[in-house]
Length: 533
Image 1 (spheres, rainbow, N blue to C red):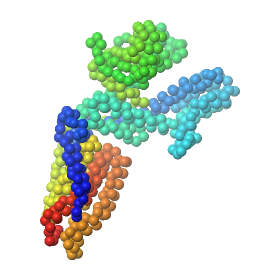
Image 2 (cartoon, rainbow, N blue to C red):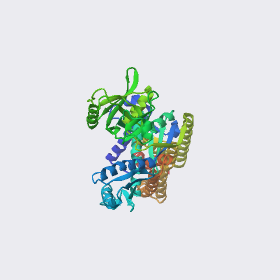
Image 3 (tube, rainbow, N blue to C red):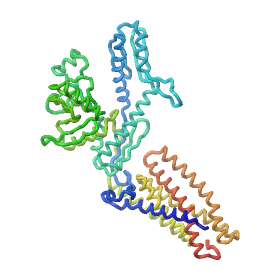
Image 4 (spheres, rainbow, N blue to C red):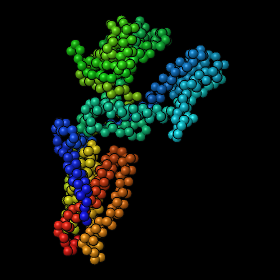
């Protein structure tokens, strides 16, 4: 029962860090920002069910991901067959395949050889390179060729699109200043967004519902849209709807993308001539392209296309060499700011569909907090009273360890910036019983040693030592269960698992180390002739 000095210092340091970690939970956000850099600044975030807010379940449109790849493949097929001067007709996307028909069916093998160069090997789950191809290319004797994505390629592209969409959604939410949002992947193609405290879910839906795909095209001047629809227009043009209420309702643009939003490094809402506009700036590569385009096309119209709509088509009056420009249109201050956020955060790889929407009012959250606090207080008082009545002085020591355990749980959640949900509160209440359970094991073993005739010092040492293995086994199994819940659970289950796992770790620390230290301090001070336990 003699505690080494280093172990006493360890407990003291842990308690001090825990108290410092609790401080931000009682301060305003402005005060936290002014704290010295060496102090903890994270705090426990209340979940959606405790403070209200909005929840959206989004689905990435997998068909759009496949369609984008197929449309890109059309251009690659054209470039692959052109050097070999292989003639074809009807090249385009039909359903989930790229199809074309050779004008000379006798050159089918040559065409398949050229197209095979577009078909890379995909890596397998093991080592090295596998034999799985990205594309499935089928040729028929009449010269018809059909190209589709393999199942493996389709799954990988959809998975990559969901991962990219997850990061874009996170950046967009963070741009709004809402840094307490919970953004998680659910299933193969869904994203769960929870924004505690948000009172305007429509603003989030508008922000997340746009793909924000920004491209720049040259306007095909003196081309009538009616001729394009009739198939008499020049090659390589398309009709794009205008987002402007004034001016042309549609534009004829060249399909070739002169510049894309991937080269943007910044976008800000600002004012020009007392009207809201969005200023943008390109990176070095984009600035060079922008300068070349404006130098070669002075006097022509340069269309800015966002989500397949022309938002502006200014005339290039002079070369722009600085790599920056202005997007003007019928913007309000709010819409200009939203567009700037979208451009800064990047483009979504595919559209998102809201398949479930839920709004929790602050009153319901307040009721949940009140119920959770009452449950915690009742459980704490009941445990404290029981331990004192049953174990006397040792019960008081166990209760002090229990209070420290609660402090450590909240401190650990604060340091991690964890989100506290209603199931999380249930996990804390459960931890209270588990915390004293370890002390019960120790005290009962000490009681048995006293009945066996051991001296007080021997009974205490044997009781703590022999109960340790049982405590470790019991808490380790609970820890494994909590880890499994956290790994495979979602939403509320994760919240419960977080508090449960943290509670198990802190319980082992307080029961094995802190309780033993307090009992040892009492024993060497009181030197009892017998133990009243």
